[in-house]
Image (cartoon, rainbow, N blue to C red; front, side, top):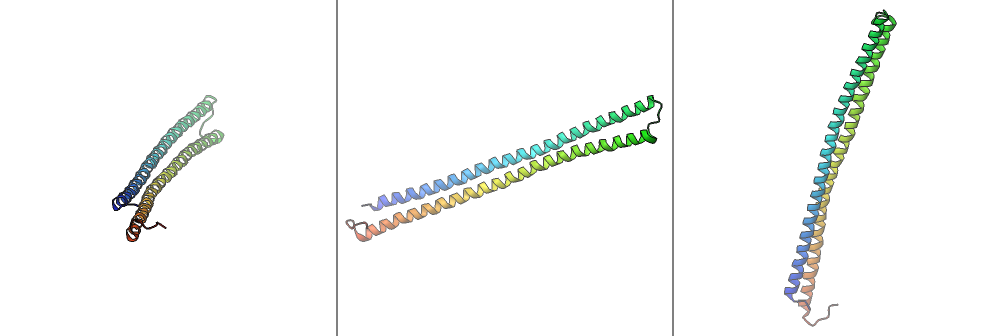
Length: 170
């Protein structure tokens, strides 16, 4: 037979285990959320790096196209052709247009890449919130389970006392 002291110890141990388990669930959820927030920060840094790299590539493309236009003008001048009129002018205008088009493509690609990183960051933030919620949910589940078990132990003790020390358990 279980004595009241033994039942009390069993009940206390059950409750303590539930509280400990609940606290660990919250702690684990918070840890996973902090990792997700850290990953979100890394994704934001990657977005910034993508934009900087895109600006650099865009600048290089503009410098390169400026060199091409300068070379074309020099070639026209060496041939005795006036560079800004007629066909040579159209060639230079087309070169400027295509150079600007290339620079805009580079810029757009960098912005798209950065956007992808920012979407990833938002996903990590949402994941962190989910981890925190899961930790709290796990804690509540542990506490409810512990309370239910403790109530069952207390009920068994009540029945034993009511029936007497020599009564059958069934």
